[in-house]
Image (cartoon, rainbow, N blue to C red; front, side, top):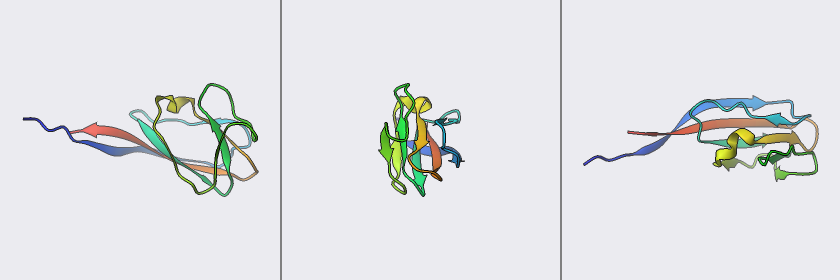
Length: 97
C-alpha cells in the first residue's frame, strides 16, 4: 500500500518595491501558488490579461495576505493605488512522497 503525502515547499521569495507602473511577477519554476502581501499601501491586481490601474482591478489592502492558487499565476499584474506601495511574495510548490 502506497501513501502519497502532499506537502508544500517554498520555491522562492520576491519583494517588489516599485509599483508605479504595472508589474508582473517572476514566478519560479515548480510554483503552484503564492502568498502576496501589500506593504504600506494598497495595490490593485488583475489576472485576466488586462492591466490594472490605480482605480480599476481587484483591491488588495495593505498587510492583508492573499493566497493566490489559480493556474493564472503567471498572468498576475499589480499596480499601486498610492505611492510607496511594496509587495512581498512567497512562492510555493506541492511535492509528494
